[in-house]
Image (cartoon, rainbow, N blue to C red; front, side):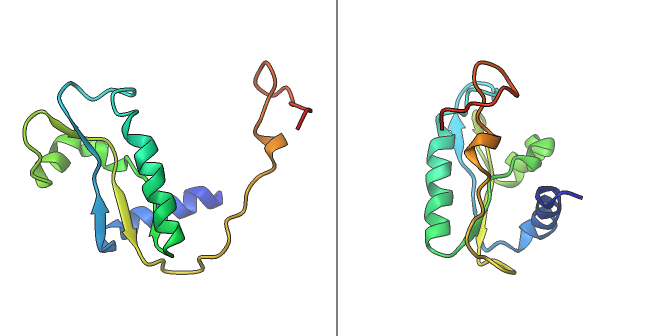
Length: 119
């Protein structure tokens, strides 16, 4: 199993143990793939701030499989919808430097899979 899948499985099994959950919400409209897009830059800043403070955090939308039940459990009023869940807490295991893939492995020129060589 790839490392990302293992990490996701471990995170989802322990999400209830996180001492803090941040649930970004918007009022009005029907949730769509783009309607919450204004939230995600703020979410990214929260994730970076948590990391800088030595806290573990992740963005998940797995709970949206049970969106109505989750929003009811959170006590959200009608017309307010959640777009993510950020469990935040102290890491369980090793929490060292982040490894990054080479830009050449993730940047393409003109079309998918065509290497961008001007890096």
